Image (cartoon, rainbow, N blue to C red; front, side, top):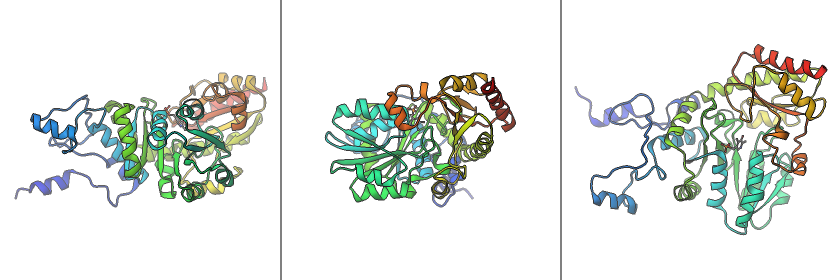
Length: 407
Ligand SMILES: *Cc1c(COP(=O)(O)O)cnc(C)c1O
């Protein structure tokens, strides 16, 4: 007996209700075409055609749904948006050209002149510059606070505060913010809470389920996971995401279909990779902590981390990034880095390849000395994004750095 069209559709399309995270990361967001393709297709097209002038008019007028132009919507980009929204547990996602474009769009779409932002002082270096140098020109001011102190967030709120912005764990010092507590503070004051979830991804931490309103990602990092493309995304409720979508479609900071396809492939292995990154990073952090020449290791998975308990509550593991301070200053940190042989010296993180960075002179180099001091990014600090190479090989490389400290 032949299947009805309905039965056929139900069999080849996936509906995400009731499925676990590992399943969603592989299957959510794919809408198969009539070709019945198994893999996710890439729609590399700038515009879409209409069957008639009447249909064109209806689409442009908003009377009929459907694609018009890839700055507005593109099926591959939408597949990525649906998959990340399912993983974060949000109603809708909007993809952007980069992580920074996501933050900029979030602020410009949801805030206006005269509004105020409270932001963790331990956020990504460009995020600080964006708020201080550029967002401020739109008449939106920002106060930076100690991310670990919930009462500091509360104290910084003014009658014009509309947005609280945090990154937890922070880069590069792994300071944590209590998401549920700050979400409660935000909502009691009629403000939104946005969380940069770059370091843990929905595989290890789901801020929306803890009360946050918006999650932001630099897809460039773990969502891709293999260091290929730059991209970003915001996830939240329909209401706020509709505003963000309006700005992206008009302002043009959209994601390319090709990059969206790469990120879709990245999401398929996200939970698997994040578990492996976390396991290796925990082992590296414990090992580094015992080595002579290392002053301190910053990693929320260590029982010695001052917020280890909070980490266990709001995260399901501790992620792949750790930092450590060598005994000494810039010279010693550079000597350590230069003595390694395999790990990549690069500013990027969240890659299958282990990367090593001197934050004070690279990722955080554009901050003023005062801003850097306040964020605790010292000259002896080194950041390691632990990849998926053999742990023994990564350790051997770190040993070369440690040996160089002694010479
Ligand atoms: C890299 C990064 C960003 C910026 O993302 P881009 O894709 O480089 O624009 C923002 N936040 C964090 C935590 C990052 O690591």
